[in-house]
Image 1 (cartoon, one colour):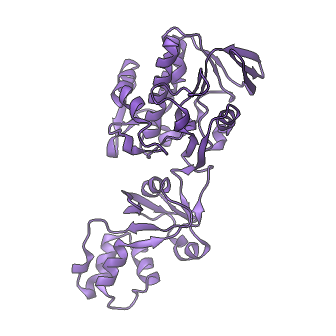
Image 2 (tube, one colour):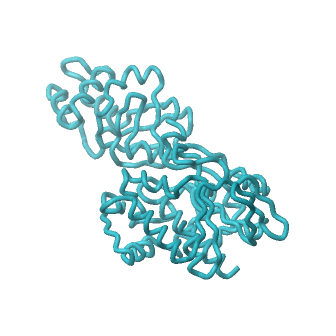
Image 3 (cartoon, helix red, strand yellow):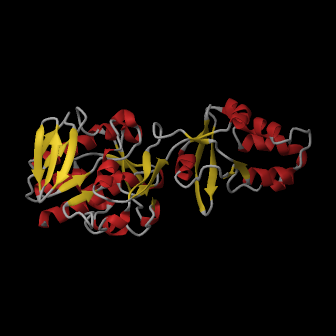
Length: 366
């Protein structure tokens, strides 16, 4: 929608094809219904890609401040939460209304409930749809990824990329809860609903945020963040008391102090299962284990619960300036379908705006 609106406002005649009965369904459920639409602290390091430099150009040319100007023009109130995350004050419907209004201002022809059945290219692209064929010199693929299929997500964009000979990086669920092994579920599943601040780390990457125990495994912002870096079969390292030196605690005070520093259910279960249930446990050993708790997840909750899809159309195939396929002039890929995956906190929205803007700029001079 953003790319279509920008291109339309620049004088291009644009048809926007949407296979659902209404656009923006994923927008409406994002950010708890308030749409975490960007982040004040956007840098290339906040994104995963086989080419970590690819996103820099687009992100530099359309910044969070550029998008905020648009919100102010539409008089949409917003607020900042933690870590630079920006949300709509009222609801995500404000954001969707903005996009639809911009599309209307750009005279975009929006075709909902329209299924694409085939795409071919000779001198022009021909898109066969359930409402008849459409032809154009340019085609922008903004189909998103595989995450949250209940919103209409499919692998159509990846199939189209393959059809035109473009390489893909393997796709995977990202920003997704992790599941326990059967043994760990028996050990820790009773803590479902308990939340605590941790440092979750894998390799050189770590995040300090809240972690939530669930019946099936681990969730919460810290886990969603590190899940994008986690590799199946490898352990996660969790610091359950970040910034706290427990080694100075007196041995006979250990149990009481741990219950003050952690949620009581977690403290009691942890002492029991980690072998520190004796009346006077070893404070030094507790301190070491608290800061270096290791758990190997069985897997993830999959694309049904993943907020985004990692991997996608290889950035080697695209121009970082325009998002156009190098070997297929006139074919563009933007947003989540591309191998650029942001952290939790508005980064994926900002990549959507920035990559859409880059393509729209190129379309206006094409």
